[in-house]
Image (cartoon, rainbow, N blue to C red):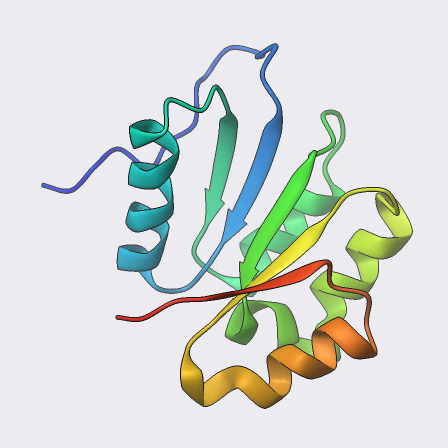
Length: 122
């Protein structure tokens, strides 16, 4: 069985991150990295565009960072990214991309206001 992708159940004093990626292995890798670096972060995981939109629109609590794969972020013409910019304009939105999605990722950064691009490999 893989790592627990569930967030802490109680409200946290740690920065909140939304991880939105359809690829479980990428999400697991990000979680392992956060734990290995001993980062005190509270996170929620979404494995689809729809669940990410639902979590983004739920309040409270807002997120201090959103990390999303390009396929999740670009569904519906960057709907998730655009609405993050509206609902949480000061919150960085980082795109993760595989080499095949680089053009879409660049569009997200240049035209839609993504904060950064994080290349990943499977």
